[in-house]
Image 1 (cartoon, helix red, strand yellow):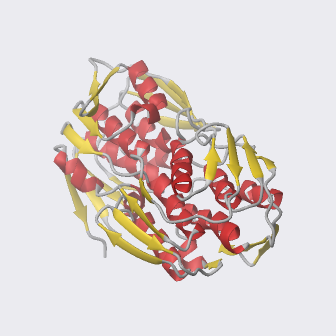
Image 2: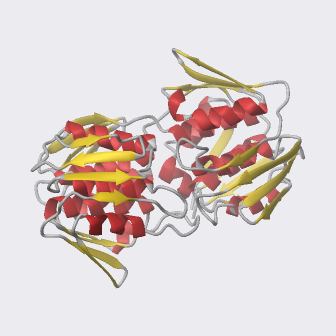
Length: 420
């Protein structure tokens, strides 16, 4: 497995182009299963997860052509089964469930895998399918969904940790070809859900309210092909913003959207970071000193759980005591122990990380446990004195397009070390 060797102590300066959003492109790729016609998706990031999803769709019968930043896809005929060997690799693959049920009225999908960050059940996905009239069976690691006739219905998608993003996407995609009206209450409000709805509407669907807590879907008889451009990746953007602040540099995010970053920007400003939005992007610059903050992760528009690890890395540098409370996933502090190896003072108390910041970090070998933890360790390595080796960076390749190249363009000394 590849690793990253990082020589710390160099400020990041310059402009970084933000790629298309991983969490938007995966369900939109799945949505192409809803039509027999050709679809073209633009601003597609070059990620391992995108390649995995493309392979899943190919094994189901779809034709997928990948160009630079573009996907051309056509599912003239499609199988109703998504097998374990590919689906196990990432959580996002579960979003083929809704399109298959909508188009074929049946689906057999392996329970998905992904990062080890806690239990992520699909009970709300299945609740929505049942509400539309489908029968659900769980057997031998697969979920089997059958519904000869799907009818719109009122559906409440409330869960223990709040709304479900992929569950909302799955129910919308199943409902677009159902008869009548479906109203989803407590829908996820993330920009990626709104982006999916824009694509579906371009295909001829009737989806309204996406991006808010109530989504209405009026079923249509069929969908047609469409072209679509993916929104910028708000998590990638916020990661580079924090990396720039941590290294005392000035970083401009080209293509990022401020309205997608409101919660992160609010906390950075509270810490003393200068944030300026202009025609060339959004520029982040550290003030004279940073102040500690308290953060609680929440569903959008709250502070994103996908930025918790990166912010934790930054807070280890801030004198004083900061607290991050994780309310979305119960096992998302595995990176804390690795940050301690670099010299950070972090204690985990239940759902909270208590950070005593200000101690200098020094390079060491660390192990990445999941996608966002990998980014946090890279940020810490950019600051730490000496050389930091971040192992198992295949996680990074799942969600960050050419991170090592982008960091070098900003002045970092980063080298990819091929694994054995």
